[in-house]
Amino acid sequence: MDSSGGASSASEGPDRPVADPSLSAAERAEYERLRKAAAVRHRRLRYAATSVLLLLAFLLAPLAVVAAWVDSEVSDTDRYVQTVAPIATEPSVQNTVTDRLTKRVVDNVDVAAITATAARALEQQGAPPVVVQGAQALTGPLKNALNSAVHDIVNRVVTSDQFAEVWDDANRRAHAAVVKVLTGEGSSAIQAGDDSIDLNLGTVIDNVKQKLVDAGFSQAAKIPDVDKTVTLFHTDKLNEAQDAMRLLNVLGIWLPVLVLVLAALAVWSAPAHRVALMSTAIGIGVMMIALLVGLAVMRQVYLDSVPTTALPRDAAADIYDTFIRFLRNSTRTVLVIAVITALAAYLYGPGRGARWVRSAAAGGTGATGRAMARHGLRTGTTGRWLDAHSNWTTGIAIAGGALALVLWNYPTPGAVALVLGIVVLVLVLLGIVAAASGTAEHPAAGDQPVVRPG
Image (tube, rainbow, N blue to C red; front, side, top):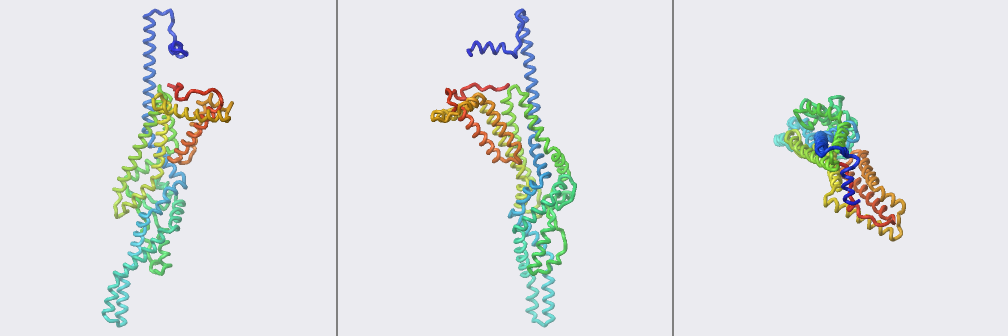
């Protein structure tokens, strides 16, 4: 098509009204002015709608990620057990539990009374005063020996596979605890207090007591059933957090869907769809970075709020990191998807870098396909069909990758990279097969005009 033909089609296309030839010059000018004013108002309206939709999508995106995470933790028992299972194997947590249980056991053994009783018995038997005094002086060494022995036994229990199994089993059977913490309903080993969340270690303590009795410490059987709870963390905002989590639990499924719908409507309503898609991806990516920063800030706030007397800092950090690791992974996954989407939108644009990438890709697949054809590996009709319908096949491959991520249970950045690699491989193979049809060589795709809506 020559330039004159292009100009003619552009000025008298089917979408553009043609002025009545009987109009005077002044009437024609007024007609053009009114038409342009209407077009400007329509374009401004589309920009306004796009801006509002994008703003809502950006603001709701982090909340949607958090809501989906909460919903999975509450509704999926296996996911919840996956979340809390590593806590039992964290060395800092094991050391804390060992020290706490050892102290409770030793504190319930009156070593001074035992040595005093032994001293009185020796005195009644007529033992020399030096021996009696020596028996009384055994209080400190005996308590140290008892503490060391109990600590070793408790440590073996806590670091054993049995402890991890008991931990997992208790959490699986008590998954209702999560519902109780978030909604206040049900009963379980995890209890929500007025300003704290506590874990009942009754099963573990009973196991330790039995181990001590089996090891010859018969006095351990007389240890009273004192406080068996360990405070996981303190907060004066528990009620507010429970209300927020209830709302997030309800919105866990529909809020992510709403964000996708808002983003899709924003791209559809924008005058330039490709630019809108790139802007949407960049905006959501920025919000995911903000969420990651927020999680890091909350980590520091949490660690500062936990007294070292209640929980050592390293144990508190391990508990926090373990508990939110799936939320952090989900945020990173959405960030990776946003970056890939923005890059893809850019590569379909008119930029010099985008044209170079398209030309290089088309040149590489074309050269490979033509080399195959020269060696007799022609794809014939199939290759010609793929070449004629390259836009459709490319769209189907990309849509298939997106569908795979939607259907993937809890995708990770690694899963996104895998799907991206498969999609790119499929596109490369399609390009090679199309170029190996044996027909005349085609110009590189990067040199062909790219049709973009909007």
